Length: 370
Length: 105
Picture 1 (spheres, rainbow over the protein chains, first blue to last red):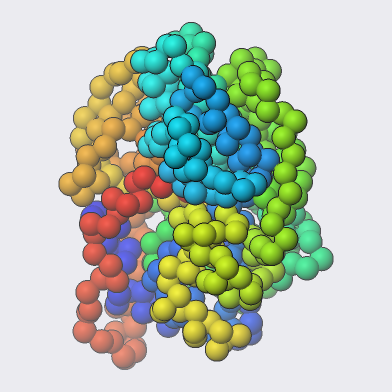
Picture 2: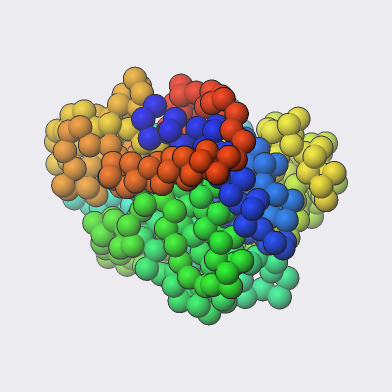
């Protein structure tokens, strides 16, 4: 496939790894923020190829994983209501709430449907005027434009039976939280390529400056990831701080202004709780008062739901890069993708799921390396 | 953080008042909303995430990146860095379809 295959060329991958090896003189810890990148790293064994001085620490960039338990429990309550069609991205259906998940609600008779695009949920609302259609709109900056458009379109069409249960999070406040933590080991960031496709990277220079940490906008194919590592290590070795773009075929400094405009039309910045981590100030987007009638939490009475996490699961530490999945006693035993204790084991971007899925090829050597 | 998938825009049309298009992911076709890329035209490559085109792929930048990488490898060859015969890419296309459905950061 064009623009995919070329960036997986084994020969160029090997040469880039050699370049990195030649430039490294001391240990460095880099964090890839995005869960999609974590999976690519495990899938292609990128972390195994790199010289042992370079450690890739996995970040919180899995929207399914950081969606707070309360929001899952609210989703479960809403999906159980009569005359409701509850729509969601597929990843959310197996995420455990307090005791059950959306699949269970569906098995008990709830009308829970997976949609590919939030606009499909709007179409469902148009064709089912006697039902309330709720869309579970979670995600980072990459997904926010799609969810914002669903609300905007519902308003434009004058739909009275569409609403969004939102849980949007933003990357820059999470970077502040990670770098500002006294436990942080992160010396350089691989910034998430598709978040930057939407938002650009104009928000990053002040972060790089404040924490004296290089940030490299990085893509998802093996060569993209290695170029990100190469640029970050290059800056660290040279004692430089700054922001570089190693994914220029997709990302510009300004990002997608049309998308940013609609996000700001429909959403406003708010505090947000991250599952396993806690509250991060100004780290989310909530629906603006002008669009309040499309906010499922205002339309239905679910605002009072409070929830408690499983005490066994260490997802919070994993999401902050403080621990790796194989350090969890429940990993692969009590906690598997079929019976997950935490969302990091469920999502196609979750770190625990990545380690579980590719455990045969990598975990043994990971343990050895540690 | 999010998996977006590159595809070629093959057709542009309007549906429900929105600018939409058909995108070819190596033989698999899907509909995508083009509202965020008002300038994009048929034949362009775009990154699609949850049914929305979020970025037009710059063919120029892609070519430059690959040219820089290939140039480095030519220099290596001249300097005598050991090269092995080119092996097949790490992965073949065809599995990208699975990425089209997921939601990513």
